[in-house]
Length: 105
Image (tube, rainbow, N blue to C red):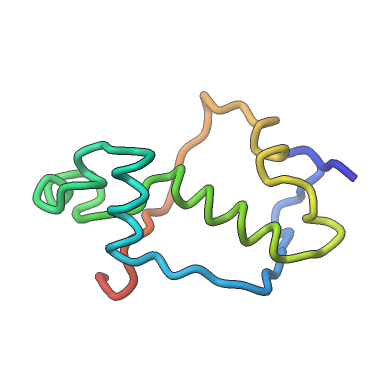
């Protein structure tokens, strides 16, 4: 069953069987390949950025979320996270939390 953004209620939770550590190396590797903005690939630039340090890109955290949703295996979350998120109005989206490398904060 495909679910869309309107089908997800505030507070809905999905438990994944897996986990993902966000390491410095993972942030740099992902950013170099997919989101090479200076504040994701240069630690000195990142210190002066809005994040105040090296942080994972939003698209990196979205990719991790997709993986964890898939691993949850629940009937309510087998749909693609992308199918939920693509029904959003991206012009009004904001990323309210920063993902830093494990152990860096």
